Image (cartoon, rainbow, N blue to C red; front, side):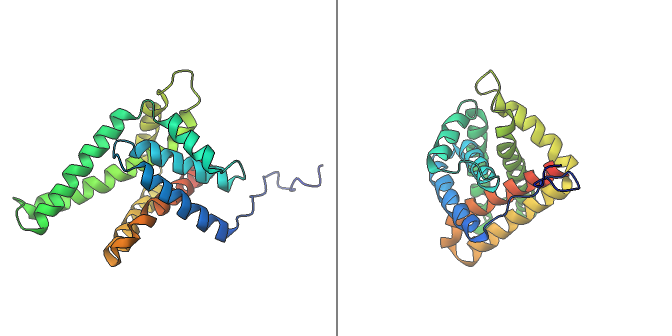
Amino acid sequence: MDSTTPASGREEPIPVNRFALFSETLLAGVLVLVLSIPLVTIPAAYAAGIAHLERHLSGRDDSLRSLWGTFRSALPGSWKLGIATAAAAVVIVLNLLLAIVGQLPGSSVVLPATVILAAAGAILLLRTAAAWSDFAGGPAPGRGWPSALDAAKALSLRDWSGSLLLAAALFAAVVFVWMLAALFVVVPGTLILASAAVKMRSARA
């Protein structure tokens, strides 16, 4: 038996430098934020960010060039999901602003429903972005996104504990911004790290 192979037959986990992971998460998060500015590029940006952290955690190429290359690869086929995401984001923000100024009819019902639907949509988006890299190597460019969306829908229900963890990450991000608006720059980093961690957790389970 190879001396480097543990007796249990399981692979030894790659040691993680927590400070390096923290800095990589912040850097990747800022880049994802910049790439998400057009709104319709949000799915591709998050897919690139999550894949980047997966490579970092597994000891593979985690250069900025590879992140940019992944983003460019994720763009084909993501436009439909990106437009839907941008439209949903605009509606959610408008509802929240109208509720704040007291101009939203039926706000006692519409506002909680908006928050719940926004959280569910965000979880599905993060799950889809995380799953994209598993289907990106297919022969038809852009077909990875429909397959990733189908996988995300099934996984969101099957791995309900992972979905709860993503909901907790979203809640923490909202609290960060509520405490200090400038912390919005760290939100993408926390979300892509949570998505990568939940994906790896689901795979091991």
